[in-house]
Length: 399
Image (cartoon, rainbow, N blue to C red; front, side, top):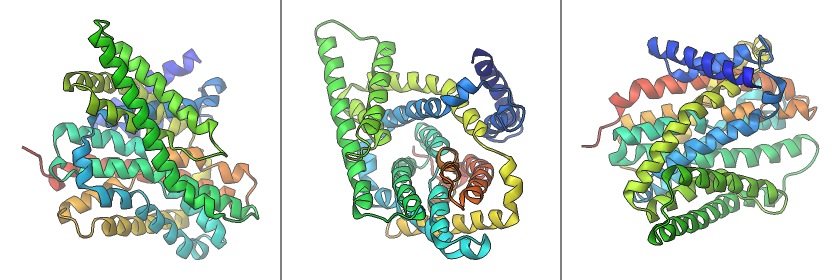
């Protein structure tokens, strides 16, 4: 495992640096590193690290979500309440609709198989989007209209919505039926996640302040470890309660970080945010290299041009959904264009669930995985490059 970690860090960093020199996003170098080192090309990564790949990716995602929560300003988020709620479900629903309408004709699949495929492809990648929105908030681009906050909030909820729909459609494809509780679980999961996280954040802030009042100062490095430990516990709660009641662990983590920011003094939250930013330097490499390692490039050859066409049709429907969410707001057309671009990338969810239909023995499994792999390879770089190249032109810098 140590050799595999050495490859991940050293080759991943080198490839990221090369991409940076070529004015390409670092993520491309890391994804390519994962594909090359992964089991489907050179097979240099130890099976033991691949067996815990999903957990490592989740840990990396938790770190950037904590950083995001500590950077979020809740008053800014209130300004974009309705669009943020709509962004969590409308674009994904539009993309699934695009697959339902066109995939049967373009890819020759059934309607229910098209729904499964749309659900796999429907999620935006928080791993690509959230770090960039955090950077924009730090640089003050688009913050006057709360654009980064809007995109980050929508992207955090979008995955929950899509995964619940995916579970429902897979059940239907196996000959089961959809139950009303499957759809009720979506808002329940979001609300309970926020409440659980807020309670954890309040208790933690109370603990830190009480310790400080009694002259038992908890070092910021120790606070980082405690916050990480509680975050992992919140993610575990989601697993413990599975089948009983739905709770979003990722939203709980963001909610906890937001409450810690509100309840703690600015200096403390700023220092915590900086420390999580430093942790992200290592977590980012692990996350994207392992996402790349999960990509089976053999399936891209079998997918063909029809799959590429279907991916772009889905993105058009998704873009229409984003535009609908922003109707009636004071956001300019340039800012709306940026929101459309920021909602393009797909990576983490597709890598996580793309192979599930194939593993379950569904007839559509092979084609779903092929399209998911192609979507990662096309949209992750496309979205990342699009955000990096356009934010200065499309967003206003707050003075």
